[in-house]
Amino acid sequence: MRQHYNPIVTSIATIPRPVIAAIDGVAAGAGAAFAYDLAAQARDLAGRLAAGPTAAHGAIKESLLFAAGHGLAVALDKEAELRVRLGETHDHKAATAAFVRKEKPVFRGS
Image (cartoon, rainbow, N blue to C red; front, side, top):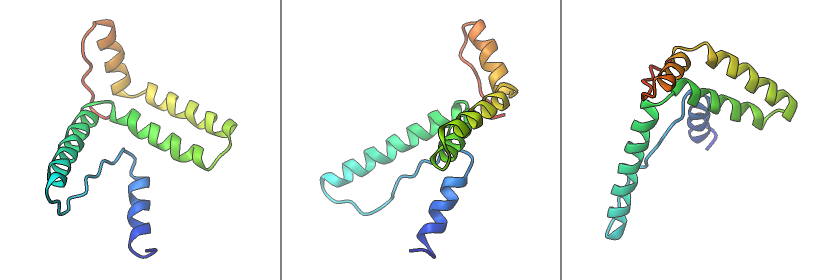
């Protein structure tokens, strides 16, 4: 477990973006429909997340992982740091401009 599972989980946890995984396995009977539906939902969610503010998604993940190992005051400081960083991104500026124009924002992930 430590040699195979732990490195995989560590890699997933430290990727700076959310990770969506759908397990592809053998299913029979009613399970096949469930497995297909689950995979379809995972693809749909992945597409919606990829089209969204991925830099913000990554910052949320970073903040949650940081907060899990630190106290509230330090976690709030980290959140403030991330908000400043995100406020300087193209995505933030584009989303703000789209909001003012009452348009749907287009995100680049930067």
